[in-house]
Length: 79
Image (cartoon, rainbow, N blue to C red; front, top):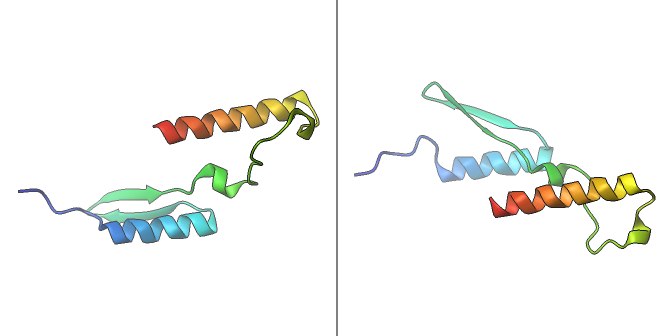
């Protein structure tokens, strides 16, 4: 027999919706334990343009920052 979940899936979804729409971390305390839901960092910043071309960047630093964001996003998808 499995143990009852501390937090219902509907409550987690509600917390995630608020976190995403407001761009904040939402916390709830259940039985003395705190559970937090944070928005996706990429969703709170400006959306990345798909299929960027080298001319779209004004400097090497801009391109490197974009590349780092893309690598982080890819790592997050694969985890």
